[in-house]
Image (cartoon, rainbow, N blue to C red; front, side, top):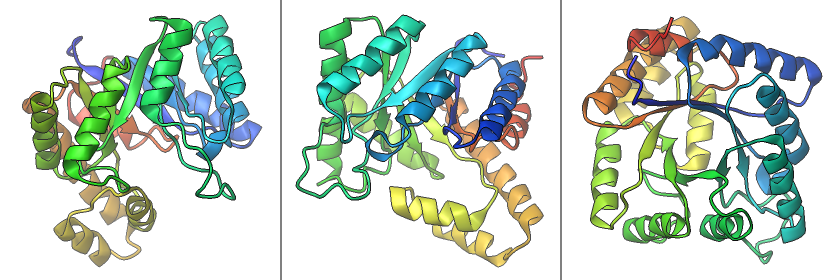
Length: 280
């Protein structure tokens, strides 16, 4: 295994105790791949704040490196500062700083605190105690005014003090490589790790992709649609497609991979074994 290769896994906080126990089992199973960290998502407007914190603590207690996601959402500075102080006291060394989504019921007139502002807030109060990850969008954020505007906004996150980026998932490697070229032209020198989404359920993937602006290439969509409810064929096709995507990314200089695990060991583990990245 290449010790210089960045590898990380993303989880979402389960709502039940059984779900949390299952997640810890998944973390233990995936630890064989020696990830740099596990990240734990944060619901719209901080709606999963407590669940996120509980999962982060449980993973940290197992001596895993953990990066909690964080956004202001509907919270005030005092609430976020207290949460950051708790993470600092816990020994957390890495954060994923996001703008986040408005929670349901929060009107469009509510104040939004953007990710660059959150990064600056963290640096103001904690200096360089945390390694800060930020989100990047190779196919451009669905709310962006333009491609160039989104690149400038990403640069603002790094100028505010972010250390590195994690991308939204994508299936077209050219979108990532072009994006990286444009970032470099804009003066962004920090590493930006591509996000990888395994394909296991086309209906769920299609719905999620439409919501977050991730493009499923037409030929891929048509192929997956043709399989209908044949989940085994969908998984087999998805495994081949995403394995090839990962190989192309790594062969052409991507600094690593960030997997959206959906709280499952498989197929992320199978993808990594296909790539020859099984550490044991």
